[in-house]
Image (tube, rainbow, N blue to C red):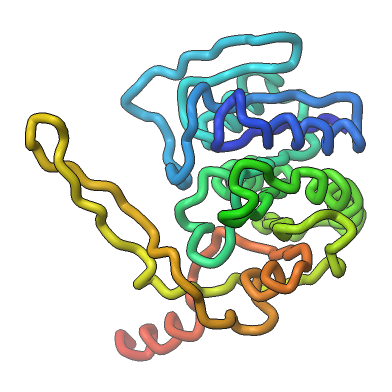
Length: 254
């Protein structure tokens, strides 16, 4: 089995090495094509107005000056030149990708692009908190990811569906198990604009997140599972058509 790995944290991210170790537990034919720089939050963006610079770092390891989407396309269409891959793994992201994160995440986009290109794909993310911000529980992803991937591949992924896997912020022995979850929803009042001034008095701004106690998430969601130390496995699809409302709209125009 030929595995293509990408991420959005960049070619030097520790989570990329974790993902490579996970992949090597499944196969010895592992290829890495990751962004030259951190691309967190770029979503499914595609570079159309800038050239893609490809740099080979070592055998089967490449950096692309572009987005995770660019990396997957470059890996499938150029580097592997149509000879696979059989699986795309995107991650392991530094931080969870749940709820509305999936619309912003470059990690999710890597798996989405793999799916668009007809390759079974999974996105992998490791949660952390303020206490573990600089010392993530990477071993949790390492322990649970290979078995989850094997089971998903054995079952087979439906057309246009990929799997989002989030590992809880705890040591492996504290994980309660694997939960199949729905995409959750977060309180968007957590987002705010942090306005500042530079040394010359000119204004600039950061998008920030309010750090406060959050209400319990709905049961059965990715957020709830992680809060209770379960690995959250969420099947996602990129057909975002709302069929019930589509039917109502159709009735308005007939």
